Amino acid sequence: MSSRPASPPRRAFLRGTLAAGAVAVLAPRVLRAASSDAPAGLKTGPGQKVKLACVGIGNRGRDIIKALHATGLAEIVALCDTHLGAPHTEEIMKLFPDARRFQDFRRMFDQMGDGIEAVSVGTPDFSHFPVTMLAMSLGKHVYVEKPMAHSYRQLELMMAAERKYKVAAQMGNQGHSEANYFQFKAWTEAGVIKNVTKITAFMNNSRRWHGMNVADYLPEQPVPAALDWDAWLATAAPHRYNVGYQNGDWRSWFDFGNGALGDWGAHIFDTAHEFLRLGLPTEIKATLEGHSPLIFPQASTLVFKFPARGPLPPVELAWYDGRKNLPPLPENFGAAVVDPNIPPPSAGANAPVTLPPGKVIYGEGLTFKGGSHGSTLSILPSEQAKDIASRLPEVPKSPSNHFANFLLACQSREKTRSNFAVAGPLCQAMALGIIAQRVNADLTFDPATRRITNHAVADALLDGPPPRPDWEQFYKL
Figure 1 (cartoon, rainbow, N blue to C red):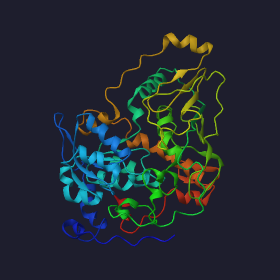
Figure 2 (figure 1 turned 90 degrees about the horizontal axis):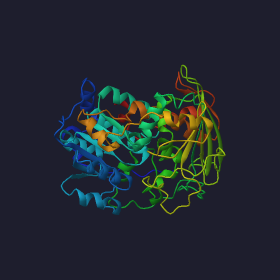
Figure 3 (figure 1 turned 60 degrees about the vertical axis):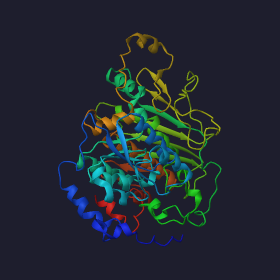
Figure 4 (figure 1 turned 90 degrees about the vertical axis):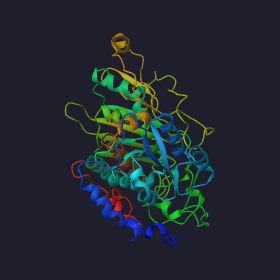
């Protein structure tokens, strides 16, 4: 695969702190931030709005920005997108005409970093990492869409950065601030959900790669004049431009996306992962249909085996994706849980739906069914369910939605519910599943050494691809 020649030097990068180049020259400023025990940047009091810069302003990024602004807690001070002016960016540009505009987040931080307190990251999965790492190293709070990052190593570094820079960080699995979060927490603490040994999770909706059959990367096309392709690629390996990688189609490719598991796992079994303290699996068994070294399989069954955690028993979590790869469900499952407030998968609202996304949780004496995002659990009919119905604990209401929770955390008024210490291990477990999809093999993982012990190629994939020149610095922040 050939790569496109490097972009010509940018004039803004030749003066001030960027006189030596794009990223390496940020090192002195970043290292100064790293030496401090407190985050740099502005401090917003309870009566002030958080000065928010938004990176990725189209498609899902657009929805994030509108939701953050709707809280009334944010002032949008900067908009950054590698394809400013493209149709999918126009709505946000019109909504916030006074916000400064950039195509490269590095330039944005260099030119107005002192006027930014927090950052939203709504870029494709693979480019969450560099934006988030630079923001945190400069003392900026970060809201980053799920999954947090693209590789196991990136996730490890982001968790370490959250601890080091002491910023408010939130991953965008918004169900973590809705009814399911508070219900799961209350039911676990009360012993309603206890001694879970098995979870079935499924996402069988149509995805962009279903029906695709590729033998190579896409052929090179001319780069649109308004697109900064080099900045779009960020830390990813060099690729020739093709429109087939743009506007959500990146989700199909291992090099850019995280498949159905990375896209929806954080909405389906996130609360089970947190409140059952699942941590990292020791084994993953993979059964795939239509394996490809380039794009995600047509169907996957991934069985994660989580070991005992103190008094908690081992858990087997089985993940099913693919239009016809339906999970085994209890006879009394009934209708699937459907929440009209949940957005459809990015393949489109009119794509065929075989079975709405959801889960079944098998605990001691009780079996629970649930949907996705903030949908609450119900107890499947049984004698035990009748007995416990009158003794269910009260479930508190959420004090803030996921976007307000983040902005209030920026003001030290709340703590983020899906901070990186919580979301990171969830995403790492999913990253291991994605590696199993990529190599089409069962994996054995050692949580103590953080290595895959039975497959050398899979073990190497924990680190992700080497970053392109000028992008290594983000792994040193």
